[in-house]
Image (cartoon, rainbow over all chains, first blue to last red; front, side, top):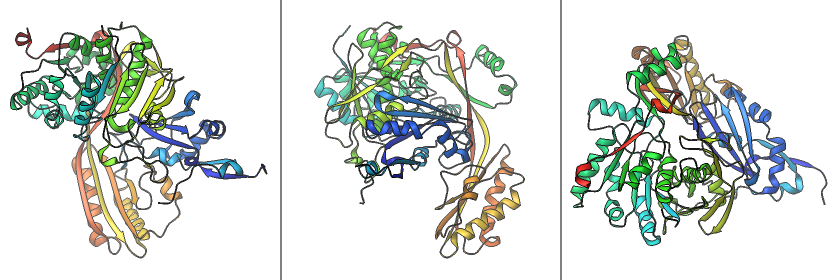
Length: 123
Length: 453
């Protein structure tokens, strides 16, 4: 039975992710753990929402590409790497950690679904 | 031309990767009748560093670990007809080829037929004049170290078909290392875009080494990877039709699953329908992946379209000096003391230099240069904080002030600061452009053509 209550869960419970870089452009993939989580991600993980989530890094643009056949999407964030691997003053010049910044993005899900999502098992 | 599948392994994903990955790959290739092995050892800035090394010593400028990478497997590959294709020539493919000759001699082997690629290094007056016109005044302001075009797979294929046992490239696109052997093996036409797209994506899956076999994947408690201390490097099988699958070397750690393959498929990709290489515009917008056996994943639905008109070019230039300095604060009010130290440095030199400030232990990775996120970040009660200050400047003595100011925190800063470390390094920056193909013609040649006749 669904009681229509929703809860907020971090993105990592619905998807996994990897970051790549070219120059000052970062791409962050988001890959649903299961195909039936994908519609939720499409609905909530929009270009606008991701742009806002990364706003402190001042992206010039955020573009989302869908790869429906594998339940994935690819975000291309331009100008987010403080100049890129050669120019940046930051520690993670490749922006390798940015996927883990996105994986904390809050997604609203049905409480029933939330109880079934993968989660970090305590070690 | 062969219609049997091409089995091709990869034993290095960047310069500095593990060097013990090749032997299990080669042993597996021998057991299963595999034909080719690639080493990928270049990144955006590796080639400029190699050029600087070559400026110091005309025989240097190739992959420093070349001998360590090849020694364990060179004899096995030559004896079993496994072709070796690499970009470890970097700024000096002929130098790398001569080193491989010496290595063969040291190992008591018959001299292999070694081919080198050329044409990626754009140093002629005509090439520079074109880039000057395209980039405008910006070009003249650059203190250039290296200019390289990303060349494609055709010359690799030609060298292999002519009998090369080892191919040494400089700057070629990473997936071309795999497409070259596929072109040579199957004899595909250069405009067979569908098949070129498939083999290019096989190359894309291989080019980062263990990133498709469980490397760069593990999250304890969520994404487990067995035996990470001995991750196996990947092996792709490419069929005549272009169908492909990925597995890994036998008796190694790691995993190949639909998840590891999906992550690597999208790695460093922008538009999945248009992955640009010198050879083809590959398209994974309708890709499917399926687990077909333990540690074996089939990939289909890949295709390709006509290649881009122009070649991508990377221009690396001297970018002044990078100064970095760190100091630690621990115990009561550590974070408050680190923030006070940062403020102290900022007020003294923030007007002359754009400072990047990180509080390692509080916020040092997700933050931005302007410190916006750090300002939003509530003051915490971190008890083990390392302050990092970084800045860059064209003049060494200006950049050096960062080092002096952070060091001065020993006595002029908040209480209890310790463990200052400083570094001042010359920087290499880069910009990209494109050039028409006929302005950067690629070529290949045997190192000793007379002796192979």
